[in-house]
Image (cartoon, rainbow, N blue to C red):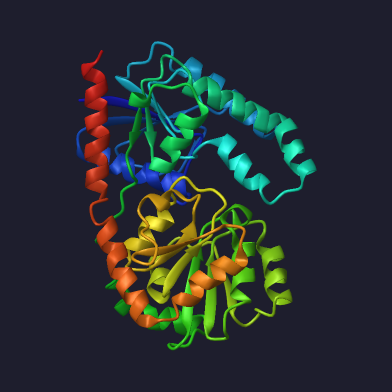
Length: 377
């Protein structure tokens, strides 16, 4: 039996990275992997998982991340695990899952919408300097044996920025529950949810799901919506500190009656069932679970060129792409989905595209990687 230590600062089942971790742990346990979770905090009630606490005192983000990395290093001294896999930028582990992508790439993409002064200040920020240094030490650590990339986009970004053996980089896509995220859910939820939010059956409902409104493009999405006709609606699901500001922006754009903010939702399937397409014009996203879930639900996905889902999107066939900062371009892509025949055809193709990306397939690929690494010892 493979004994695996997984490292993540905070574990709960609601964040995107944490939902991946939850699914991965289920898939790995099904294949006989014994898992220890090393975390600062975790959701109670986990079964089949041994949690170990690493929760040193901290003030601020820099101290938080650096202190956790040092505590994990001490915890792993003389450890009994066959392999250690970190989901944080912590050098010294066997495997790193690059689920957060490349921080330098994120800063570059964010900088496209910032002033020169704001870009300069970001590079001088102690936290960003710490993350950039930790990232470089991690990827260029000779002891690092494998990097799990959740998209080819992330793999290519790593190769472009760091001195690392390409053979260490393995693209393993997130898995999605194809039975749970199924178009049949529309029959159960669509009419009720649309009625609750005042969405007419003849209206086209675009859905945004996620936190991090600024990074994931809610402002640009609202500006795109202002260019669409009255029959188009937007439902925004997610809890974010920017919600009040985005609500005010929607009102200024004359969208008060066409945009609804649903807040944080533990169960998103009814919202997918009520939607006609999912819009995620993110500035940078290595590969969000929302993209897989939407496509599995048979919904066209409209996203950006810097979302890892670009690996799977064939524009016009199973989804659409737009520049994350171009509201006019995004509006054109969304407007094309007013055609119900096009939405239906793209939705079918989207589900077919992600059909191989099951949780079982993800678990099998992860275990195969672990076995490959253990054979090389």
